Image 1 (tube, rainbow over the protein chains, first blue to last red):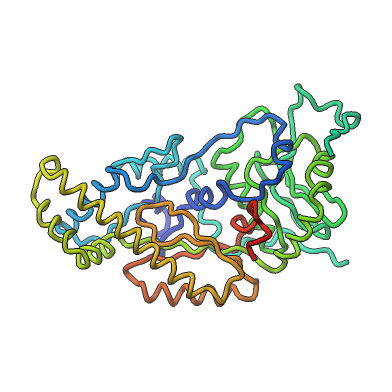
Image 2 (image 1 turned 90 degrees about the vertical axis):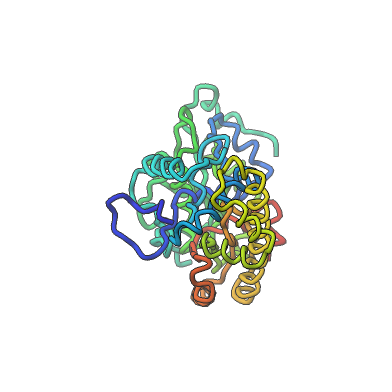
Length: 133
Length: 264
């Protein structure tokens, strides 16, 4: 997943988690929704909508796979498609080219703040504890 | 329980500028041991009510909610808390009018359900196992198994993309279907491998065409190492074919849905 490598960042032999993608995949449409939710949300606040789902089985998908097969002959590079990235925009239309994906990934990193967002691989620090009762 | 106690909330109305963002529900015997900044860089606090507590921070109501930073904050706060105590994560975007409303509208009406769910989550956290197919490896695998795909590959080799469009689409469709079938099989293998180490599991929708698996597991604290080890072994078996990652521990996002009581 070369696309998630930080520019100028330290090289890593492990695949880097694509931070925001994992965050969205994890919290979008998940979590507790209760009957009271509608009442809870009565305070008007604009919720941005993000469509992180891949549109699977489109002609674009098929053509991309075919092109990948075609590339097998040319180079034996262990090239992997980057995760998702292109779908971060509203509407969720999948980008077609590798270049566009990289561009979008860059933009997202900028939004996130350019920092290391692979925070969750292991053990977040404990910020709370039980009181002794 | 439809009374909104207007006498205590008379100041909250059309002109209100701040509300309370709610991250999740915790047991009441929890306290925060250090300052945490949440959504909008506001300090995260606890609203206690008996045996329950809500994790909240103030929020400006004027701006939109849901930027990358907001999403990251929501998850980071919940995960850091979940590492120490059970937590029921609310879906992103829950905002209430006031601190009183956190108690009267959220905690009080749902006290028994929340308490029971928290008890069930005691000592358990969520881990997500994600696998990504190595493109060249999985394509070679499919081409070696499917004679039509292999034949179509010959047909498009060296041909102009437009001239061989039909063949390309057919080839891509075969590959897409084959990947889906492999995803299902490999996901099943992951599930059966980890079955004994997790309390519950949820297979998530794929987020990438080459995703091999995306499964959330609810895991007992003392079983987390076992899970790690099993995934590592599986990763060794699939070396060069699937890249596996374990995310977590995190709050049990996938295990507090509408039918939360039947996940066990």
